[in-house]
Length: 128
Image (cartoon, rainbow, N blue to C red):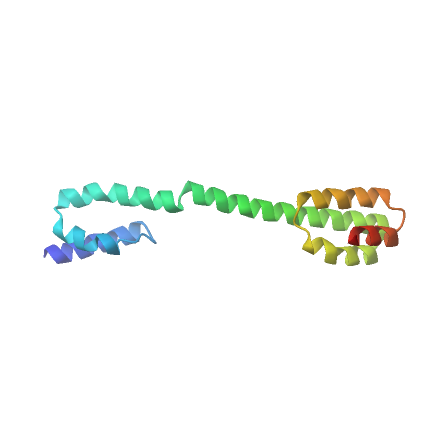
């Protein structure tokens, strides 16, 4: 009965906290009293929350935000190039823009859009 109860607790914990690895404490749970088991749960869940909780969510959100920001900058520069020099130049510039990830490079390209007189000059200077 003790083993069945430990198995039930283990399954319950896995259902309440998906991804929680309790394999290493399963045998310990079989040997512990009910009071000790219940006292252990918050510690296990806290450890899980620290591993995959707010810090991980923050890092993932930051990465996603940076990717979206880079894509937004690319789209903005494509539109500006199309307005200033036409769709053909914008299409050719898109190839270069796809390889750029550094924010300061986007600033430089934005300045080229303003400074260059022709699309061919822009493409030549952008490639450099």
